Length: 191
Image 1: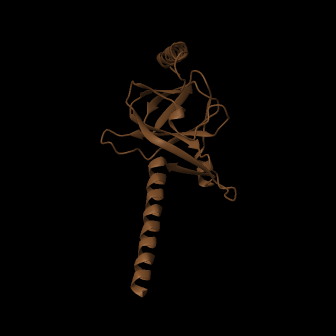
Image 2: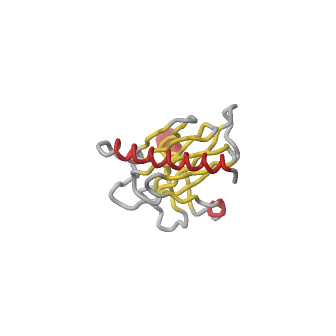
Image 3: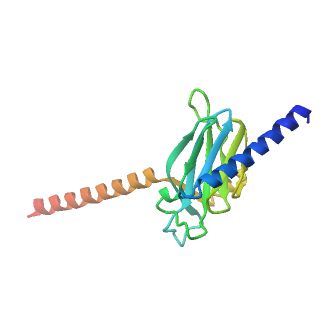
């Protein structure tokens, strides 16, 4: 490695430590969350998937639900409180996965997506650096683990967006109302 790359990496690590210390000090009086800083060369779409409260006992998959997509522009920091997801219980160890999708200048997602698991409860600071197809993640406080793509091929997890679940529930309710209405109309015709 060249001397300038070594110096650049050292300065970046010192910066991450200083940022983490600052965030830890500033967040001590506020509700704590996951602080995500984007030093990459791409916009990042970040989803926090939290283990669902009601799991199907017979299923081999674990359902994880995300409330919304958070965009983090290059050079920006976003603090996300996991309590925004109604499934999150801050007093218990709970499975939380984070998906990061880099976005190209034309706003099309890059084919590569990054997955990680939150290993500690908040506060956690995550810093992303690099190019869209080669992003690295570091933590200043808290711990994460990158999830290998081989784990996703096993279909061990079922990732859903809250909007999908709400839409399915509304569609099921509408179908039930329609069925009751058609049964009511059929009984009127038979009279």
